[in-house]
Image 1 (cartoon, rainbow, N blue to C red):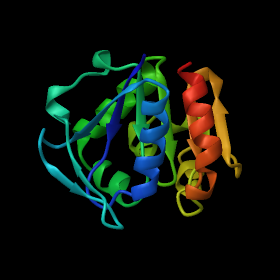
Image 2: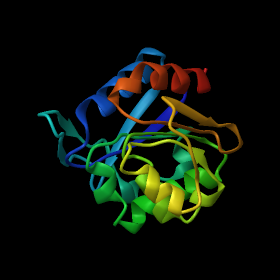
Image 3: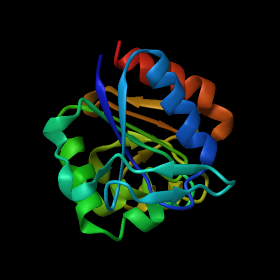
Image 4: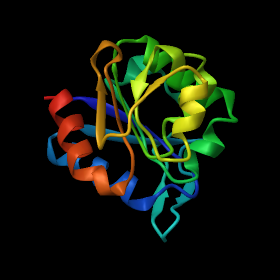
Length: 170
């Protein structure tokens, strides 16, 4: 069983949180939802209601085996908070699995590590990643084995994304 951190805040794309989290839990993994503070309420774009298990100041990369970054407007808000950017950067440098879908890869731009990455993202995010130096592909799932990074574009790609992230932790 792996321990998976999920960083998220308000306006997350509901299905990009619930679908991967369900797949990970069904595969036997422990999922921890992280926001600003433990117990804080998080509202998804389409009515999802979540409660943060942990606050970002209460966790470390060492506590987890993998990181999941769902999309929606959540990543755009998280990327202006240096604590979340540092958490993502530390994961990318740790040789641990990182999974991001849709707008999730926006956080990689702030990490300063984009130029080393091969990935995909939502249509409007791909140019930002490209100009930050990433190798950007338009595919349902992109696996960057060197960095243990799995990315996907949209909710339409969730079946493929979920299959790959659970396989990576098997």
